[in-house]
Image (cartoon, rainbow, N blue to C red; front, side, top):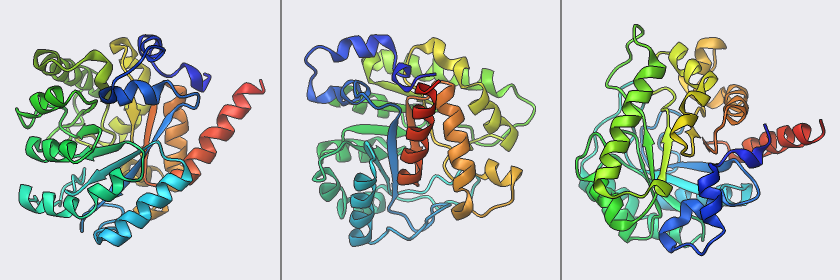
Length: 292
């Protein structure tokens, strides 16, 4: 599938008209190069793959600058670990804001959209007021009841990610994700969030067995019927280790394989820790497809 066909036609049509500052998603999806790359920046001490490396503001900013130089389209910054397989220490809103406060203004100053990765509405509101342009909610508007209102009031895009408190190998994960998306979208529409401001993320590794994560990538096109952009973040996730034993920092090959398949299945946005290799892999894959 050619990369240029990943974004919904409705979004592409709207992109030809003048767009407001709040419609950064439309502007991004109208770019000639798709999929978009969302680079991960964790300002946390306990994230599963790079915990503590970028907790200090100087290290965080240097890494963000590197992500930009390597070709990221969006910086996704989070200050509370949501470790998919447990073990994360809950962070108070005050601590989360403190970690972000030291870096967010500088990130915004880099000149590309910043996504705030948080499940707390007050943190999202503060970050948006400070210049963030996108909210990435790992509980898809279903954990904090005020999140939808904050997103709607600010008129910004929202990444709705599927999640579960724990994995259940007995369920039909495709049906579960579909039902979750439907509930989240109902919350979004009731709050007044525009259809052109929503991205869906099946939440690879979150509340899923390794087999279920694989199924979500393999059957990503099951959610094309929502006619909304799809985001996949398989970077360094544990399902890779279930296939070939590897520590988080040694899962680049598996991450690239998963993301290439995700793009073939319709992903418009790839969330990754490893921007340069991902940009290269996607570019080469696209060139090969064009040469057919």
